[in-house]
Picture 1 (spheres, rainbow, N blue to C red):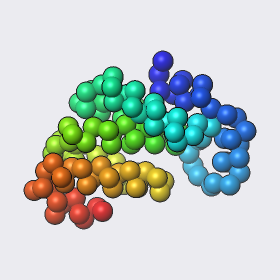
Picture 2 (picture 1 turned 45 degrees about the horizontal axis):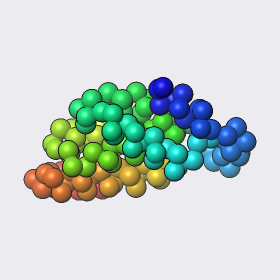
Picture 3 (picture 1 turned 120 degrees about the vertical axis):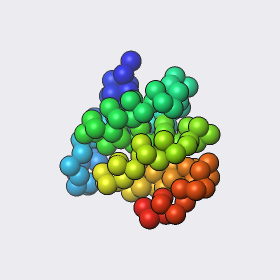
Length: 129
């Protein structure tokens, strides 16, 4: 099952309508809550290597759905032990596209993980944090 289908299956229509009422955003919303998304992120982490996950991340990131973007970020966080300089090169262009506070927090954790694994990138990454 694709991540998009899984998110829709877990959703609650009323919850999604309530979100749209109170949050002004250009994103579309599934009605899935964060704990459910984190469970899906864990499954993605178990299914894909980091290099394979980059393709999945890109599909989720460009979908136009807030929860799919969050799913991409939560799953990427789980690969911290595999981070290297290519992770920085992968995530860097996406930093301009972040629109959500939760994504900012999660991306910040990812950047800290990259610095931990690649201290030589600290100066460059700190410009974005």
